[in-house]
Image (tube, rainbow, N blue to C red; front, side, top):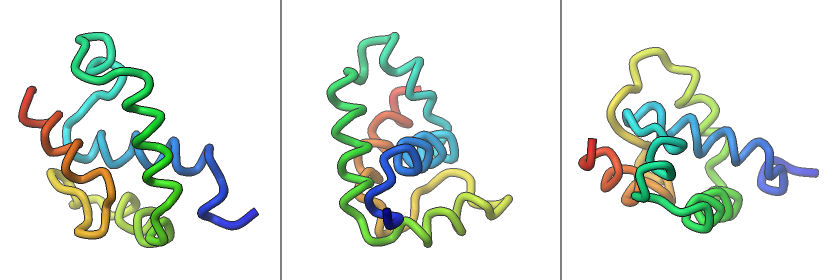
Length: 85
């Protein structure tokens, strides 16, 4: 299975990008700002992206706080959630 097909990997990439942007997805769901279906859609969008290897490199950088890479399919929703904090 390639990088794009690994749902577990994309689950963790999605959570990692959120964390980098100061978004706690579990808390956002608890607060009603994000549904489980919304989160599943985010993981599905991540799976459809060809930039997973770049995301892994980005997430390994210690100073990449505050924003998602330009190619992130979830950047808009993560930015919106970060503004709710």
